[in-house]
Length: 253
Image (cartoon, rainbow, N blue to C red):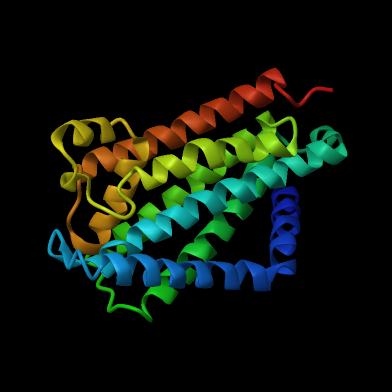
């Protein structure tokens, strides 16, 4: 394992992140505050509790998942796409490092950034409500797994994308609707039966449900299914990335 190469890629990506530290830090704080004002105040005044939890507290796990998923994908996809765009990726591919070390550097940095944003949102939420985390170790595990899996997914998008428009296509047209329809701001048990059944085909439901369980001990789907879903998603991403480097898909000139 060439740890020097991994560390070089990782630090280069983290340096790019800290160059825009103010935007990276202030943006999630403002967004979270606005969500609490709009959802927590406007909607929370009409919905007092969901599954025995105040509505303002209920939406916190969904807010964190919303930001973590989008940030992990955004950072990982741009991180690997930019070397493709500038042509420097060929220097990287010809260097004495293997694909695992390349992925570890880029995905590790993207997951770290997403984790940082998630913790910032968690800290911001604590100013609005009194947060109680029923299963702190499970919460950290779900957060880390989500950061890692969606950073891997973002890496795949960055390899696949042929231009900057395609880089934003899947996050905007696929991921965002899945998150909003995945119970981020409501429990799927509040939906009619037919919509509850349809929601179970949304993979994001299992991630948000499992993460919310770590806070309040309540979940829309069994916790075992949530763990199986995120493990399966992570495994699928790893297999696709392995195939990409083996076949040279979108990497060869």
